[in-house]
Every structure is written in structure tokens, then in C-alpha cells.
Length: 426
Image (cartoon, rainbow, N blue to C red; front, side, top):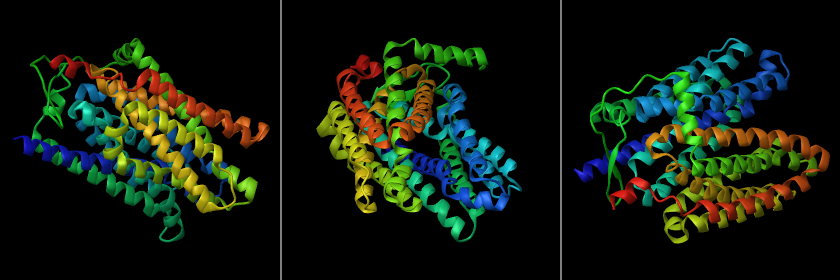
């Protein structure tokens, strides 16, 4: 039975990793399409960028619903449903008759796709023992980072070959495959995932997984805006959760405030073509994949504190050193920064799975929303500061802040997240 359970777990994780790939590709697929969309629909590039803004806004705000819904109806079930909705939305994007329609459809797709990664993290928190959870999340990040690179590169590829509409059709197929595979998995397993949300689960820990069972309980009350707000308020009343969420906001603001303007900086300082500058930044995602491939070796040797401190330092060096004229060298700097960022972020993700185990879906949704808010604030502030003060001082300040953030995580957060339920079981 244990072998069968582990095989089912690995199959489900593989499916969820593929879903994370498809969702991250969907986030970035439009970046390189803007010039073509501008030309085809007869609008400015700024107006065409509404398709990106609509997706990102929906992606962030929908976390307010997906977390509580995952806790209420089951995380795998909600991932399956939202992946199917995102697939339909992406397919509809391929046939959009105009920019307004495409913008609305991207909003719908973003609202649905935003459930997949946060609820995947929450599900891993339910099913995987803490001592191997960070390595499991790192492997899942390989899927999402590959998706980010795929979206950045293949968006332009489709524009230059068979047309931008084909890109959305490919995403629709990938999202539909995710939904279908999860449907088959939950059909075989029965309604366990949904039942697990009806009452606080009891857990027994094995050396690789945490088995979740449910005590009989009456059907949970239906969700209402007031109840959803109450669940998020419960998370925010927890002092440790507030600390983790505040750090995630700072992490998102600093890391993405720098990342968003590296291509512009390289273009203005050295005249580097924007397509080359975009490929340079893709090194960031490659760094994340490199970390995911080595996490099984790094995590047990460095521990959460070591990963946090070293990750912050590597990210600091990557941001501080960027700015040279050679694309390959700059890509290596971004690779270093990406490796460091995902050492840091993977640690925070793992800690976040234990902020509120009894409502893990809501807690991870709050985590995702905090990261989104940090990114929005960081990009907005950097966009004002960089052109006025210069990008070199901006990146220097961000680099120092990231090194300090890594030290803060190592001191106050990492290594202090022993799972309460597993500790009680011991």
C-alpha cells in the first residue's frame, strides 16, 4: 500500500508540475507578442499591453477566492476545475476578434490560472512530510520556471512563425491535459481530497509522505464574502504569519523591482537590442531550474538558514554586478541571481506551508497575494526612482536590501517552522 501511495503521489506531483509550467507560460506568453498585437489591432504598444495588465491583475486578486475555495472544496478539485476554465479561456484567446475581447479573455484566464500554483503548494503541505517538503517544492519550481522561459521565448517564436494565436492554442492543450490528468487521478482516488477539507485533518508521518485522513463531520458551511474575509483575518491574527507575509512583500518588491528594469538598463547603457536583453533575463529562470535540480543535495546540507543567508548573498551579487555589454556574461549574472532568489524563495514557500496548517489553502493564497503586492509596489517604485536617480544607485540599494533580507530570514524565520501537528504526533 505504501508503494502504491508513493507512486500515486509522484504521478500527482508530476501532473501538478506540468500545470505549473502551463500557468507560468500563460503569464509570460504575451510579453513578446505586444508589437504584433499593436500592429494587427491598430493600437499603440501601451494600449496593447492591457492584455498583460488584465491577466496580472486577475491573477493577483483572485487569490482572495482560490485559497478559501481550496480549503472548502478540496485543493486538487479546485486545481482541476480552474485549469479547465483556463484552458477554455486560452482557446478563446486564440479566436479573439479584437483587442477588447482578448483583454477580457486574458482577465478570465488569469483569474482561473492563478489557482494552480498556490493550491499546489498548499496540497504539498497537506501530503508531504516537512523534512522532504522543501525538496519537493523545489522540483515543482522547475516546472514553473521552465514555463516562464517557455512563455518568454515561445511567444516571440509563434509571432515569427505560425502566428500569435497558435501560442494560446498550445497553452489551452497543456491546461486541458492538466485538468484531465487530475480528473483521472481524483476519479481513481474517490472524494478524499474534498472530504479532507470538511474537518481538521489528522496526520501520520512516514519517511516521505504525510497521510491525511478526515474525521467524520457535517458538511462545512457555505462560503460567503464575510466568511472568506474572516478566514484571511484569522491568518493575519497569527504573529508568525504576519512576519512571513511582510517578508514576502519585501522580497517581491526588491527582487522584481530590479528584474523588471534589467532589460531597459542594458538597452540604455550599452544599446543592447531588447530581444537580447530579454534573453539575458531568461537566465534568471534558468538559475531557478538549476537550483531545483540541485535542491536534493543542497537542502539537507545547508538547511533553511544556510539557504536563506547564501541565497540572499548570491542574489545581492547578481543584482549588484549586472550592467556589462556582453549578453552571455550578463545572462550568467542573472543566472546567479536567479539561483540565489529561488534558494531564498523556496525556503519561504516551505515555511509558509506551516503558517496555518488548519487552513493551508487560505494561508498560501495570502502568501501569493503578498508576493503579488510586493511585485506591484516594487516595479512602481523602481519605475519612478530609476529614471530620476539612475539605475546604478537603484540596483545598489536593492542588492543591499536583498542581502539583508536573506540574513533576516535566516535569523527570524528559517529553521523555526517545525510542523505543529507532526511535532505533536512525536
